[in-house]
Length: 573
Image (cartoon, rainbow, N blue to C red; front, side, top):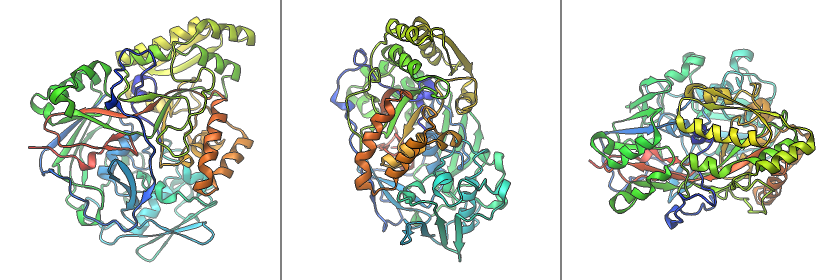
């Protein structure tokens, strides 16, 4: 899924130190990312295990500089809106975070049963689940939501595995264009959902944790307006919402904890505020005066605040793992390979990371597609100039351009022109590439419009498109390479480098069809092959490090999102 915070930094990710970054203190507290497991517990039942010390009541203030672009469940794919969506939307399956690791458990349905030929999966629904208005969730609503996800021309940001894995997924265009008759989804009786596939998809139960699988009644689908007041099935619902700035959640009284094995409802509500200055907000949260004691900021920890994290304030740091790699994209359709190599040679990693306030609490330098937390990761010798570190070498890059006859090649990208930090990061990039002999054209845009513009692959830019970071949809290379590097990834709106190579498509598909124990090692070899195409400049592997107020109870991370686990949060008093 798409990463979040670097979009705000103009990196499309969160943070990372260079090898020469003074902000890195070498603290063992920063920790190393470890490998995830993909455990399942098909027998898990509600209610969720109680959190020691948790008490009911109070409103949590949640702050961030970055702004979620939508709360339409079909269109959610960024980690922030996905994590918030876990408070609102129940899905067929979900992850229960146990001892810091994700375990797949039933939610609206069981974990599914595949047919002998692996081309159909049958899911049985729990009875008695209700929407926030008290009406019953029907299996037809779940089927309709899946059909709605094929309207990818409208819900362009949402996940797209269904377009290639589900039967006729490459033909069906959703209920608005093609009606509700679709061969890939079938219902039987009142509790049975059957998904028919074009090709085996052993990770389907993991995929069904995404918000696009939350049920939506056809009669209540308001299309583009649905994002402003989606129907909740989770423990909380919308109370008020101002797109781009705030969201207030209150309890959903029709959520039944006895049917939910992973979520809690300790808090009376949540008050989300976006567009805040990250450093000012984090400082206020650490000082915890008044309502700031009841707050958490989920922006990445700024390096300037590290010296404060001593004594009692050390307990205000929330750390955890994240399944993300952050990169700066290079559009292979528009930038020739020799020019992409020159960009990598000139790229000012160290200067950008320092300007962005990055540190080793929140990242490790990246040199691969997959991060260390994903099974199959291999720390091979980095491809030249793709180490995630270094000041860049504009003079050598200019020599490369001269040899290729490409001096003056224009490079362009979008940046957030409403925040000083993102403006500074963009300027550092522009200065380095100008010195290297490029013609640079940064295009400023508002915070609210940034994600939409970066996601338009027909826009007049050739660098820095989204997704600028990627996080495992589930712990496997199968949630990286098929979605990011096949030819159809461009049309699906989730491509790194916009590669379109039939031979590569076949290689990816062949590996994806192997059993997990065989595919894992093959993903690692493919990782290096793709990096050698210079489709992106790797920045860092994301880690969770955020600050909370003194009255916020014990807080854990969700390693599937690299975000605080909002579903388990509470206030001490």
